[in-house]
Picture: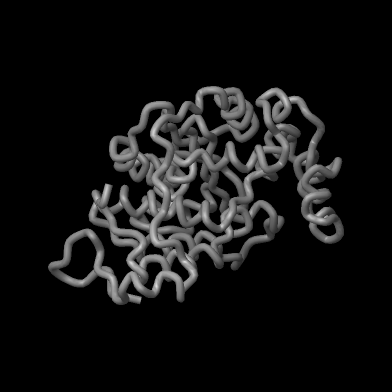
Length: 274
């Protein structure tokens, strides 16, 4: 992979191989742009339910660091149809996810794993998902086609909509464990339902990364910081979290980081190209 931080080079970031190798590396020649017109306001009730469950922090080091990083991205990522808001909450697991209305949720455990540049990069990745409305697409893939169904429907981690799609067995037991933890800690079924549908397709991870690179280029943060941040967010050391709540399980970090690295080398992503 190329050395993204080479002195004197400006975006678009340098690449080391020609576009003729796209097909050989099994990456698309380009990524579709995010939809021009989006409106995530219908998901506001989902954000409200999550806020009620997680009791976001209003102070502390993690809150302050994340707030500063998010502030540097809000204007860069400005888009009609999303109202960017950040919520940091206390949890043992390093989790990060968004809602189509522009609400971004991260745990203090995630914030603590990242340095300031990596934190900015991971937040940009989460914002990239919502700019593409990937959470909405994930809901549709799980046959959740209305907000009402998500908010008042049966807990899918216990009654099989996701378990059936995943083939049951060990995965279904894992989902049952998530439901048990939700009961113990008082999280609502809608909140846990929402977390369980958020498993993104590999191409969605690459799209979120490509959008993040465009944001980060305007802050002078190279793509390698994003890849490092995603990998650090996925570290399992010293935690006893349930697997399905880990950042890496939700975002397919191991695979998407590799694919994004290949895509960068193939010249698929050229920062500040739009």
